[in-house]
Each structure stands twice: as structure tokens, then as C-alpha cells.
Image (cartoon, rainbow, N blue to C red; front, side):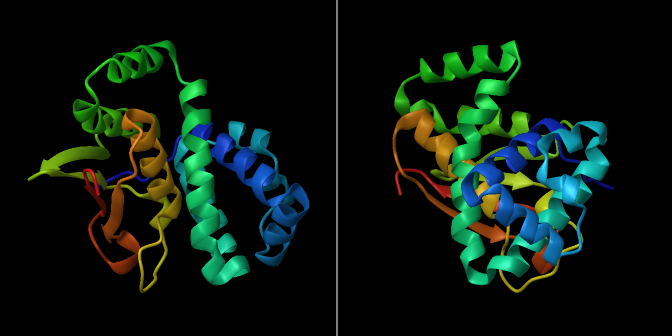
Length: 201
């Protein structure tokens, strides 16, 4: 059985980026409406949680945002995910930064898959929970744990932050926009969340 966990360092950056984007007062209003702790508006709060409890908090916070913003949630969370990529890269340990520099030194056509593997490494609280696969000419980003969809049920995929991260990661890698589709989501009853990336799309 997959352990659903989410790195607290990512959660802290997510909350900070969210607060900067929608405003601290609005974030506090989202929490109040969802009957969630007011301390969740502070990134530092999550430094005391383990990665399993952080995953639970992440899922509940995303659900609160969907309830507050409705259809507007998708655009907000895609934007947050895009902003989050560079923050996470800047926060990374030395080994990740060395790998990032190596990827940027590759020919552009060779960068997308190792860039996504780097993102998978940054987002994985448990090694191997996120994998990247080649599928014909396209790529598949597979999140088996998917904390965004934890205990959630919906009729459409809802991992918008991850999608935004994938989009910005690829743009960082090769300077191109790619078509990214979440074609399976645990919130719809799938075993895992899968993002199909059409290279050059």
C-alpha cells in the first residue's frame, strides 16, 4: 500500500506562495469558512508536522480552496504551481542544484524527461512514489500517492498545483510550452494520478 506523504518543505513554500498570491487576509477567510486552523496561514506552522500529517493538511487546504473559489480554483492553483517551481529549485539541496545545472547543459530536446525526474525527486516524500515514463514520443508523470487527491472525490481531475509545477518545470528546461493533461486522478477513483505531456505540443 502506498504511503501518502507530502514534504513539509514543499508545504511551507506552497502556503507562502498561496498567501502572496491571494493575500493573507483572503487565505485566513478560506480557512475560517472551512473551519480549519488559523495557524495554517503561517508556513512555519507546518515545520512541526511529519510528512504524513502534512499530506492530510495539504489535501484539506486544497479542498477548502475549491469550496471557496469554485471554478476559479483551477486557474489560481495552476498559477501557484507555476510560481512554486522556481522557489522549490532555489530551496533545494546542493545535489539537486548540481543535477539542475547538468540538465540545463543538455541539448534542449533531451531535457524534458530528466527535468520531470528532478521534479519527481523534489516532490517525493517517499522515494519511488512519483515516476516518469516515456510513452511513444510523449511523457507520462505518474504520482501514486497524490496527496492533492487524498480523501477527495470529484468528477474531474483536481491536481492543479502539480500540473502547474510540471508546466513551469518543462518551460524552465527547454523554453517551450507543452500540452499537459491529467488523464487519470485518484479523486475519480483511479489507482494513481497520471499526467500526459505531449512534447512540443
